[in-house]
Image (cartoon, rainbow, N blue to C red; front, side):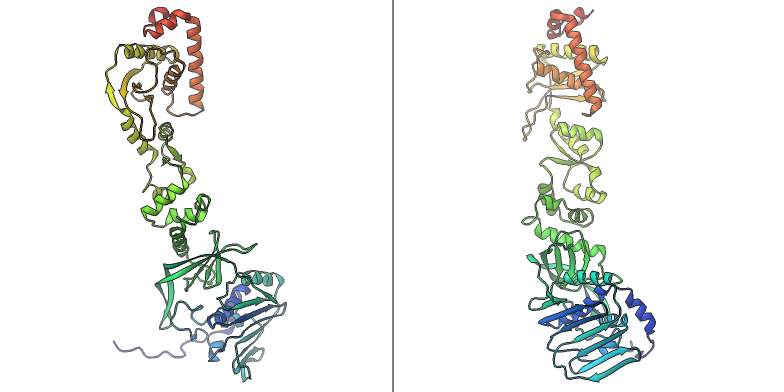
Length: 484
């Protein structure tokens, strides 16, 4: 394929249009464009003065701007193809100048002026660094916003940033995470392209009064809901306007933080943060990381909430219910990879607790007769009664009795503590009435409580009215004669 012919001077840029486009960006964002050039040149001192009619940015980098065309030629850049260099596409400085009424760029050996008469250039005797003088009337609000944004900057080590005469204080470094694979931006033949790069994430504690931000090589990009400043040591993908990153990229950074910090740096309260939920809900995490998250955040024996009936039964069996209404669908789907739902838990544990069917002895038959009579007398219900044998679970949980509402059956564990020789034993009678109440509702809600109170009251009245004779007959499993 033959090389394409050069397309020199196909287009021209309308100054008014370029000025309007540039003026739409906040002042602080525009001044950051000047700072990134100074940071890239390893300046030892960078000063910024923000006044009501003039902004001055100056650095002491050893070299200045080598080619004056870089000051005024849009999209011309001398940045090497290196994602660890700030800036891209040769736009920032020109945007900063375009939204001013007058500007002056003093660099090594050359001064370029912009004013009402146009652009002019002349030699100077400057030997080091670059000084930008930017003039127009600035509103106090935009100056205040610019100061707040520029104060967030984290200069490279060896560089001091002085803003309006005050030297910035670096935030406290918490940790550095190397070897993080994240999307970056490279420039190939003048075209920005996405690439995967290995980089370092530096985590800082925000200074007093600061909102946590995501940074690109020391320059704040946007505020976010992670509780720390996080600085990415390579170019980050930016949206139009270059003041935010795609949501997918933020998720990738958050996921890298969670994976690196979950075992040593994050406590339970940290893991309940919204940023962690963002990752759990929308990022493909490994099962081992999800297991670590679950073990740190939720009590032992937690299950995902399901139907209300299953939730209530799971609680009876000793589970902790994670309320499905309190988490997003994405988080629910992720957690379901490592946790049972309450419905699955109940099915599994019911099989375990079902135990081995037991043929009742004479004492247990009399007890079953008494249960059936009591269910008819206090609840007007006909029930089946069966017995099973089941040892305590590994967690020490022993099921005394189980009610199957659909089958209208109450099953009793012969290895439990119930007194089958005395249904009027307080604990035993309480369990029997509890299970009869479950014939009305399987849940332990107010309806259940009301039902249980009604059954207890009615049973107490029957026993009081029947006297010792009824009690004796009930213990013997043959109360019908005394109730006739």
